[in-house]
Amino acid sequence: MSSEPIVIRVQNLGKCYQIYDRPQDRLKQSLVPRLRGLLGKSAPNYYREFWALRDVSFEVRKGETVGIIGRNGSGKSTLLQILCGTLNPTTGTVETTGRVAALLELGAGFNPEFTGRENVYLNGSVLGLSQQEIDERIAAIAAFADIGAFLDQPVKTYSSGMYVRLAFAVIAHVDADILVIDEALAVGDVFFAQKCMRFLRSFMAHGTVIFVSHDTAAVQNLCQQAIWIDCGIIKFIGSAKDAATRYLEAIYESQQGESKLTAAAVATTEPKSTPSPRDMRLDFLNQTQFRNDIELFSFDPDAPAFGKGQIRVTSAALLDPEGKPYSWVVGGEEVILEIRCVALTAIPALIVGFLVKDRLGQPLFGDNTYLTYRNAPCNLGPGEKITARFAFRMPVLPVGDFSVTIAVAEGSQQDHIQHQWIHDALTFKSHTTSVCQGLIGIPMKKIELTPAI
Image 1 (cartoon, helix red, strand yellow):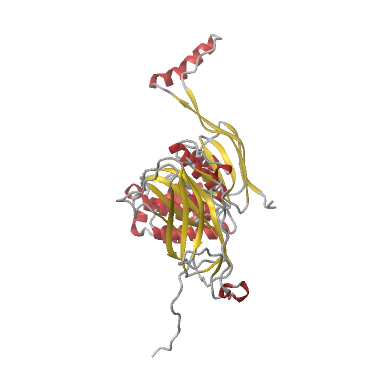
Image 2 (cartoon, rainbow, N blue to C red):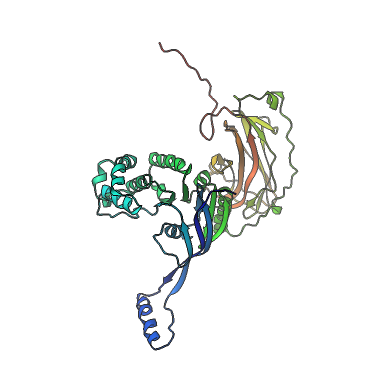
């Protein structure tokens, strides 16, 4: 357990709103209870209660980056507003230690009639900076926002991207201890998004971040822990990868009904294959620091899975071009990912796909059969078996652990029924690598230095 102090403590937090069906009910609620109270009588309520949050409790320690995920209307934004002090809770308590800077919904805290420069001073003072401190930082804020002469124009003339640029520039220069960021970063262009990510990574080295996004890959990339909220209730607190996995499963179940698969139900109808040893050139003792040697592991029939369960994956393996199973592969070699399936009922328009992820759950690459068979869909009858093969050149991977998610579905790319989604169906480990930068690399044909003429 971390020895760092707790900087955010939320206990039994709840937020209730009063919902009125008719405008006159609001007037009745403001008058009738008072009048009946004077007469010593009780009065009915003319509203319905809606709990945006209920019994929410968690702690965040200094230096942690915590993600919050959930569908629209789940209570994420309400929670952030309470954490930032812009909304009062109905029940429970929130304790924060240090200066909190927030980037919530687009344009929050800006006066549309003020210029960008005036709003910088306004926001800076709200966040605890003196005028002298803002004077010292205004040039850096303007350079970070990079909106040019628009800094001295009313913000009501700004585009959504300019709003975000200026708002993020302010919170990046207020020396905050806790940074709270909502979905707003999705608005900016790719260059500004990269600038924001560079700032976030440097801030994460010493500060605390609460990051809200629908992009589960970004949450897994940035966050150590994640909180999944649904209908105002915390459904899961744990590692970002586990939270994203459960959230994804819930999304599919909400669209197509409860998953029929359990760990026991994913048992294969074919035995695990035992890959034959590679030739001596892949012997571990002969590996060098300049090669990307990847150890492969067998298909796991008990890996976590969800779906309707009318198609089952019976085996999966990485093969060489001759169809023999690999146990080791070198980055840059040709491989075939073979996935064997059996249909339990009639399946129209079969789709088989895969996605390779790193240990944080970040998608690296993947594909499916939909586009190839779009004009001639593959239809299966009950009991029919089929094999999908994806031939590609294995990328050069950094040292670390990787996994392959496998999915079988029916329908189209946009509208489909997920029958089996298997997390970590195959795993492999990269022991040595030549990758210098990035998530994956490509084999260099030639690298050289030549004297200039």
